[in-house]
Length: 126
Image (cartoon, rainbow, N blue to C red; front, side, top):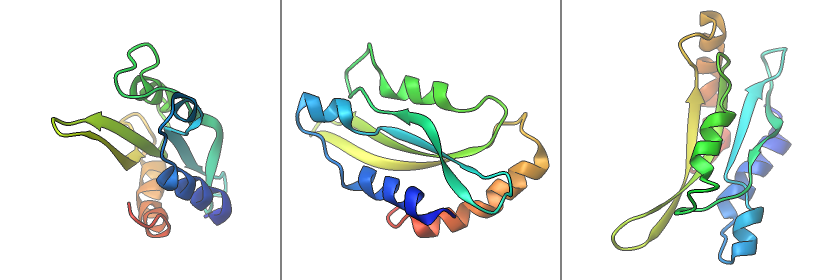
C-alpha cells in the first residue's frame, strides 16, 4: 500500500469538518483507490474525488456525483463522506466501499477482495 497518500487522504477526510458554506465546497466528499498495475500497491486515483455539495443540495448532490465516478466494469475501493439528516440532527459517517461489479474479471475481483483487509487495517476507524 502506498501508505503516505492513502492514509493521509483518509485522515484528512476523517478529521475535516465543514461548518461554513466555503468549507463545504472545499472538503473532499469521496475518493477512489485502486491497485497499481503490479497488483501489490494500493494508490489514490488522482482526479477521482468529489469536492462539492452537501445534504439537501439537489443541484450538486454529492452522492449522485460519487456514483457516476465509480468505474463501469472495473474494481476499486472508495471512501465516501456520507452526510444525512435524522429527526434529531445532521450526521456524518465515513463509509468504506469495495466496488466489484459483475462484469469485472473474476481474477481481478479475487485480488481486490484479498487486498481489502490490508487497506481496512491501515484505515483506523473504518
